[in-house]
Image 1: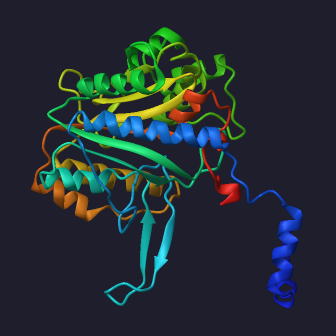
Image 2: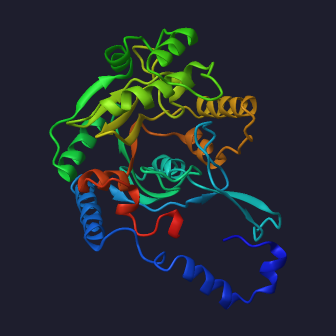
Image 3: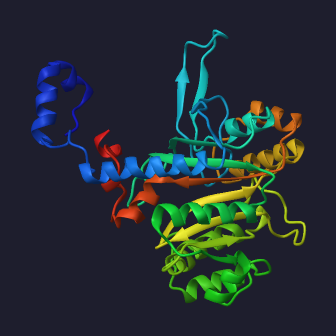
Length: 346
């Protein structure tokens, strides 16, 4: 129950606490069962053993940073820091993934690395998402995205007991499921497919190709792929892969993949872009697009860009949601079943 500021000032703190506890007498309890938390601990142990046998180093990087992701489809939490050594107020951002800092370690020649950490995305809580969640991210030197897909497939077989995964290109899955080529289709053609799929939006269908493609992919393709075995989709359009290399054989696509299983998006991986100048230009384009959409321009991570200028070795990296992985393992219906205190009880 909300109170006006004036009324709240008149109340004593013990009364407010007792009122809250009376309204929500069981809200202090975790949403995950002890059995599920033990399964979580076992899963994390399996993951660490997997990387230990592959000589990958577990690392820890900051999650509160000066720079942030510029992707128009991601939103980061920010906080004001008044105790900076500069003496000025600074805006810091909770990271949507540890990617930038981990790549700085790669540039510093730390070799194969992985991290299990919290990540934060300013999005509504739902069945598969909590604003604070647990992420596994790892990087392999000398790997392309195809070799990394093989390694991730091995991890899924170990942790979930799956059969070998299916692998299909972004172009092929659109042709297979929707009978349209996503690399050549016009806005009008994509809108027609959306209408045929009974996709409707109160404000009308988007007029942007990438937004339409993502809408069709999430609503008409994701639910039907990876039903029996994990499905790796690779070769996304360049415009949807801000941190991946452009494919050498088809310049319309990037060396990026995503993994889907049982209706859940599990992971996102790249053959990593190593060109610092090109990466800066992509960040600039992101911010221009943000301006066009009425979104705030965001500061790029200058430490990350400087590291790229110093030299990123050829490598591939992938980020995977641990909570979603555990949901699949336990056949859980909601992410709250596999975490102690979701945002509603945090």
